[in-house]
Length: 428
Image (cartoon, rainbow, N blue to C red; front, side, top):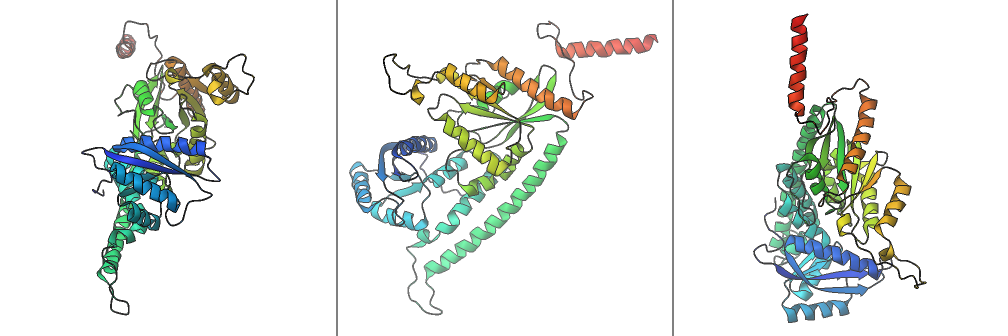
């Protein structure tokens, strides 16, 4: 993996965030995106100190923002000794070079920030390979700005400058490395296919959703495991599969990487082996942070990504609205005759709306406070049992069902049944 970390981990860098309100993105939406960008920056180890928003019909192809706003940025950066400026959209190499020339500080865009977080979070060899491939694919078209100190000295045949020579050398090295990483990922894909085949006949359930909605916390709760969970974006990069037993039905539960708006396409491509777990799942459990003010848009982002990348539009889905303990709303004054807004809708109203839309395939829970978990388990059991019964009408792999109140454990009862069968055989 590329070792040059973008953000200094030893001390939190003070950062400025920059976004655009365009024809396709109003100022309210831009503010929301910058909130998410600030969370990304904090996850990476930076300290967002200020925000700059400019209204433009479209980004300036040379400097992303206008010249006046860039001058304002340069003044603020110099006066407050800011070391990092983060832009909310992906920048071209030309834009980064021009902005760095004016601001004279480190410049990041949303994609490079996400890649930095991914590099920090990747733990397994698979995740590190996926992240490294995405890093090199992002770096390749941006090599020119990294060698501006070695420009061509004279034109003409046979007079190539050292800068161009170095760029071409680096380009070949990176292309070779990308080719090798792709081969490695193909080998990983083959291993994953074998692993999935070896899991046998068990029903597969995959947790999907936006990043930081509580998928890993729910995974730990259902599987009694210790998957890393934290209130930060992309706490989980590595796909985790655990065997879960609800009542008498065993099934496989998979925790996957979370989605996010403006997720780079090459990053999605790099995580193909992770998304294959979603493609091959029998049931999708879409976890939603209902306490987020724009959770409906997050649902749309996840559904769009699932349909485009995972081809999973027709899979059975359960909607799990998590973090009901953190949900807040503002009751509307009875004398207020203005139309109700999103902030005036209560949790019960949301529950009725989504129950009407999804039927019984949705549940409102708090994984942290363990609220309505039994209702979720019952819903999972019914859905997994339905698929299991269709696939194996002769009850394959179902455990003997016991009452939870019994004092004797299930293992002891199983041993007792085996002993009784042996006794019956001996008496015949």
